[in-house]
Amino acid sequence: MFNGTDRASRLRTFLHVSNSWQEFNLLDSDLAQLLPRSKFLRVLSLTNYSITEVPQSIDSLKHLRYLNFSRTIIKGLPEQVSNLYNLQSLLVRDCEMLSSSPASFVKLTNLRHFDISGTPLLNKTPLGISGLISLQTLPKVYIKGGNGFKVSELKDLSDLQGRLSIKGLDKVMNPIQAKDANLHQKEGLDDLEMEWNEDVLDNSRNSTIEYEVFEGLRPHNKLKTLKILFYGGTKFPSWVGDPSFHLTELTLEGCRCCTHLPTVGHLGSLKKFVMRSLHMVKTLSFQGILLFPSLEILEVYDMQGLEIWSTSDGNEDDEIAISFPCLRQIYIKQCPKLAVVSISLIPLLEVLRLEECSEAVLRGIVGASVSILRLTMWDIRGLSQLQGEVLKHLRAVEHLCIKNCSEWEYLWESELEACESLVNFKSFRVIWL
Image 1 (cartoon, rainbow, N blue to C red):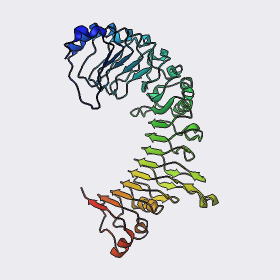
Image 2 (image 1 turned 90 degrees about the horizontal axis):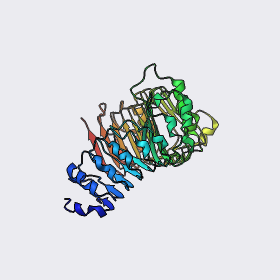
Image 3 (image 1 turned 45 degrees about the vertical axis):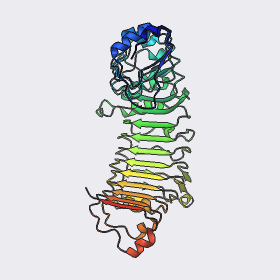
Image 4 (image 1 turned 90 degrees about the vertical axis):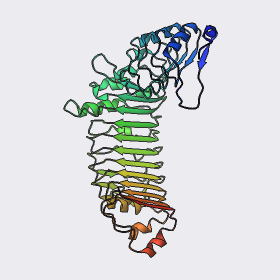
């Protein structure tokens, strides 16, 4: 493949262009042969090539600005990479075997982009990375105890942009370190994930400290996407529902000690809200004159303690309250105790998918909508047929799927009533497994 390596001394760019994920064969020996002869390379992209290791001779490319090993099967980056002083972009995206990076990373003072997305085995943040103040791309960091990476080391990385995942927040014992991270000043970040340890649920977790750490990690209000995983506090910081934020997507998952949700109903830009495994939450109660004005997708999964979903608290204002005016999709799964659904009209609901919950959930949501186009019901307790008020609210339904509803007896009691209601039917499936 490299018959022309003798002429490689004049090469400035080695860039493979492809629209596919096809893997291209390249022997490690070929690469080791090419690099010393290409000392003036500025751009080297080996994405999708079948190389398994990076030659130590990589540091002969002193002029290199852009280095891309994405979607290769390399297991580590050699120490010699740290000698590429002019390097601005180092990309190892989707290198699923990569588990190590150079210890002298701090020498890459010109580095702007370090893309380590899709590297599950790379679970240690390079020491000294906090000194790379020009860094713009850093998709994830791992907080470690002892001499490992501290969350406060994010302080001077003011130019960070795009996505950042902070993992291991249960290791932060001093809330001041969280404030020192200065997330509120990083207005370039639009996607933030905060993750505590899912497996550590013993007495080493201090809910008060975790709350204060969470409070100190307040991001800039330009943030678009926020994902909270396995937080161990009993309540959420007030900034999570602060209406000054421009959040479009919010996910709360595995926050098993929280008994109440944050007041997120007034987030004017929120389009997608996901709740998963918040087992201590018993009530979804949202009150206000205009709730979730932009929300389009609502997902509720594995809420084992959830009993009530209500948008009413009995006040006179309930009569003029508007909830979910833009909501189009609802997904609810594994909410075995949810028995009361008392919500106001959802005028634009098109997709409703219910799994492993009771008929009361179906009746409550269907009764608040007349625009459902696609209805899917899996393992719904107490559901034996479609009848009465439920049928009347399904006039717009085009696609209906019923799966594993063990108490199901027949489709409907009155064929005439069904024909009058289900006038837009296009597909219908009943499945038992």
